[in-house]
Length: 245
Image (cartoon, rainbow, N blue to C red; front, side, top):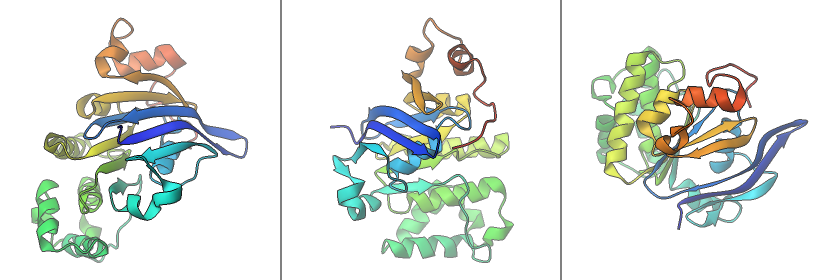
């Protein structure tokens, strides 16, 4: 059984059809990238998988269970970090983690584990307001990992970060991948991010899946890289800015 199943999902906002009959599945422990420019429908699709929005039609199952009937149970097994995660700036890193750990009844041992995993040891006494962009994203990831989620959702986690901070986050996620216990759904418009981190890639545009598969399958005989493939499919670049949904 696949851990996550998305079946014929449709979502519209007034006259804009943000997600158009999207279907895919992913087994446990695999990393999946949803790749596309702003406006492709990535964020809307992920918010439905996270249970934050309801689809107009279709079905989303996690471990065979739906948000409609099993929301309380599913909340316990997912972790998420949104595009713009905000924390109280006058709390320290450790105080922030302690607050969120209390929601799951977790103690210092798990806090220490995620601090170590996200390389925040030297910043745990620092106020959140003093953190750099990359350090804030590592804190957001640490919070998302506190409950040892079976499925982790990261929505464009490295947007706006400098190359060094982006690489730091990639290294953390690769270490998590080696543990083999967590399934990752990653939205990004950086082709290198998808290539570096993920087992399978879905290319989205205008709410539809254009291509899906492992990197070699996507490129074989079609293009040298994902950006070139995307240009062939849509006539524009992956990083083009459009109205986001």
